[in-house]
Structure formats: C-alpha cells, structure tokens
Image (tube, rainbow, N blue to C red; front, top):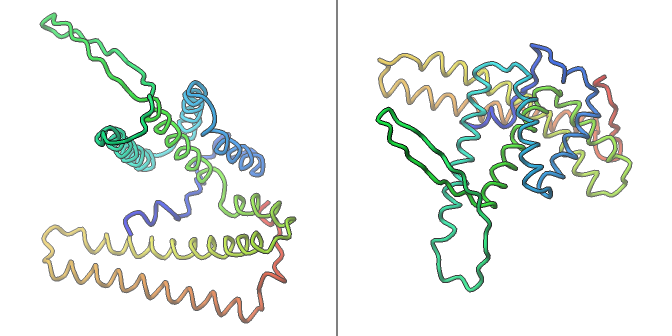
Length: 255
C-alpha cells in the first residue's frame, strides 16, 4: 500500500503548463520509447549527456517540492541498492571465470581552515556507473512522460499502431492493457480518498493503540471492499455489453 500511489496514481500535471505540454503526444511517446530502447546500448559518454539533458528537461517543468522530494527518495533508494550490490560482487572469490571491470577514478581535494590539505580518491566501477545512469534516465524519463502526457494518450499512441497486427497474442495484450489501466485509474482514485481519510483520522499523536489499529483494519477492509466492487462492476459491464476481442475497436478520442 505504501508504494501504490507511486505506481498507478494519475500523475498528469495540469498546472503549471510547460513547453512540453504543447508538443503532440504521439511524437513525445515515440521519442521517449525510442530513447528508452536505445539508452542501454550506447557508450558511457552518451549516457552522461543524456542524463544531463533529461535533468534540464525535468527542472524546466517547475515541479512542486513534494514531487521533487519523492523522486529524490526513489533515486536515492536505487543508488544505495546498486551501490551495496556493487560492493558485494567481489565477496565470493571461488568464481572460475573472472572479468576485468574498468573503473573511473575521481580525485576530491579539500583545504581545511587548519591549512591541512587532504586528497580523497574515489573509484567507481564502469558497470556500476552505467547502471546508475541508466536507472536515473529511465526513472526521470518515465516520470516526465507521466507528468506531461495523459495516460489515455499514452495507451492510444502505443495500442493503435499495434492494432494493425492481427496476431492473437498481441490482441490479448492490448485488450488486457486497456482494461487494466482503466481499472487501476479508477481504483487508485478510491485508494487516494481512503488514504486521505486515514491520515486525517490518524494524525492525533495521543491516539491509543486500539483506535489506531482499528483505523488501519478499516482502511484495509475498505480497500478490499472497493476492489471487489470494481471487479464485479467491470465484469458485469463487459458481460452486459458483450465486449470482447472480436468487437473491440480502439479510437483515438483523446485529441
């Protein structure tokens, strides 16, 4: 539940309107997807350029402090996780096959008030540096796309060209994706309302343990009640309207 709103909440930024909002959504989605597909295969030099460029685009969106803080926490969590994994790669010395991993050295020099000159040498493996940059670019790119493009337009930009392919597996994926995104959007709205109600009733520091536990129980109970309600409503709607893969027609109605 903690990360539910991070994953599927409606994140489109209605205000303030930025220069990226004015670009046509099909062009933006195509460029973002092409960028994400190409990034893992380029050299480190281009990764650095791409990370700087995507950072400039992010800062140009004039995000509020809450969004910036959440993104910083996510990036910090990824950085710490990858750093710990990178340090543990050389623990097992029984490997029969070993590869030479290139490293990048950075010299950090500092001069204290006592005129003591200290020099710190930091080594970062190339593999770890590439992983950090790729993760950063992916997280920021997806976040920018979700902030500046409505999810309906993202879905139509991806699914409409795929509808030309008549393979049954692709048709199943498109059908499930459309229903799943609509369901998650409706459910996330309800979860947000439950979360706000829970925070309002649970902000009192003098509240006893029994009352706090009861609030959490009711929150979880209401979540599953809402989940069952929307599943039933969606299934009934599909059954009553006889909506299936054979009569599914995708129209770009978001323009």
